[in-house]
Amino acid sequence: MAIFTAYGRPEEEKSLQLYNELADETDRDELRKLFKMLCQEEAGHKLKLETIYDDYMARHGD
Image (cartoon, rainbow, N blue to C red; front, side, top):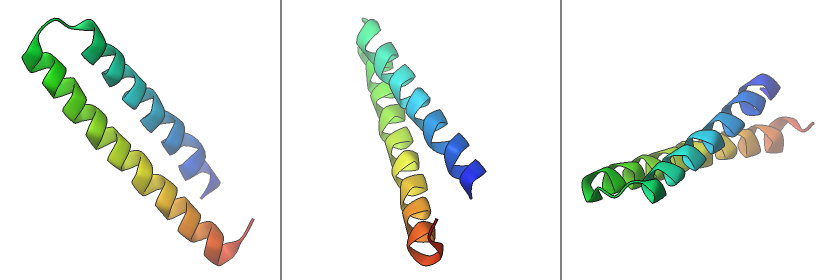
């Protein structure tokens, strides 16, 4: 579980940050919309990983 969360959450955060930066840098509305949509998906992935981790820790402890 530690490997799963240690790898997963930082990777989701990096992707979220990248898509936000790309959305801010583009002048094209359709690309900005796409990057914002991808940000929302990554935020959902990150939340899912955090929920899985929190549930696991609540059941099994440290």
